[in-house]
Length: 257
Ligand code: 13P
Image (cartoon, rainbow, N blue to C red; front, side, top):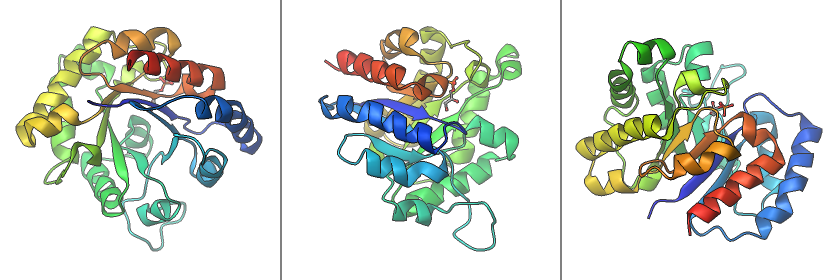
């Protein structure tokens, strides 16, 4: 049975005080919940990874990085290596987010390099893929998704389904308030699962978590989770608010019963 993942991507939001007050607000509620089938994740900026990890260490929450360098180490000012992340005890990192693809020109090949560095260091990548509005309008969604999967996972060995998560994030739905409908997202999630079955094994495809991202919020989460191939959310804006984040966890817990 796949887990339901509620992963918050804080992007470049929250300073130190804001991080502390968010942790204070969610710590006790998290400790009072039972997380058998639900996995809460938060991805703060690099600067606050350790703080979040320390503050929430007694909870079920997993702390994730938002990105990683494609290099092992060396003269790469401003970059953070997978080995550094692993040394903090992190188990997850987002990779291939459309904002990194757009702002830093991360190609599928670079995303693949980053993903391999994470895996080499025992960190599970949350691989983001998704089409632009122009690509969707031209009917190219399926082709773009396949190219991203093939490019980012070329010759990547997956031993079990828990080695990787995939997040389908249509770029036109990120930060726009325009969510893909459950049916629109489901269609792409099904395609991703089929590609996984064709490329790896049926069992791996059945067990791998595929998250949806793009204007997910408490009011639309239940509808998305009711789709057979949607296993949670990668959530930007709504994860910045402690009450909304907890509400989305409650929705996932309810759905997991
Ligand atoms: P929003 O939830 O703010 O649309 O952001 C989605 C996202 O990019 C998560 O990685």
